[in-house]
Length: 253
Image (tube, rainbow, N blue to C red; front, top):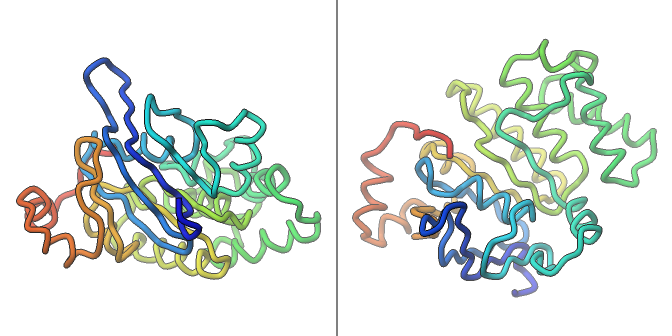
C-alpha cells in the first residue's frame, strides 16, 4: 500500500453461497483526496464492496487496507477507532426515527469526535444551512421528504470530518434536478473538509456526475477504471455497451 493510497484491496474474494462469489479477484486502489464512483449493474457486488471497506464484512480471502491499517487483522476495538475516521451514508439515510434531525446529527458527533458541545452545535447549524435544511433541525424523519432525509444522512456522514466517506446509492429515487443539487452539496462539503469520497451507484449518469474517475464492477471484479473516455478506449465490448447503450437505471444490489 502506497502512502497516498487511502484504500487498497488486493485479490479480495467473498461468497455468501458456495460457488457463487459476490466478489472475486478484486483489486482496487483509492488515493487520498480522490472522488471515485463504483458503478455496476444490480447484483454486481457494489454494496458488499462498501461493507468490506468498512470492515462490516470480512472477505474469505484477500487483503483489505484502509487508512494504513490492514482491516483483516484488527481487533474489535481497533476497528471501532478506525471507524471513527470514516463516514457512511446509507441508501435511505438510516436515521433514528425517534430523534429529531439535530439529535441524529449530534449523536454521530458525540460518539465519533472530540468536538466540544459548542462546536457540535455550531457545526450542526452550519451544515444544515449548507444543505438548505436549517428549518428542519427540530423535525423528525417522518416529517421529511426522501430527498431531505438523504441530505441529513450525508450531513451525519460528513460532519465528523472523516478522512474517508462512503456513500451508498446517494441519489436513488431522487428526481434529476434534486440529484444535481444533492451531488453539488456533497462535493461542496467534501471539498471544505478535505474528505476522500467513494460512491456506489447503478446509474451511469449519476456515476460520472459524481466523479470523473469511475471504477466499473462486473461479476465481482473491477473491469475498468478511469474517465468515461478512458473506459471507452479500452475497447471492451461489455463496457462500451454498458456505458453507451444501457441508459436506464438498474436495480440496487
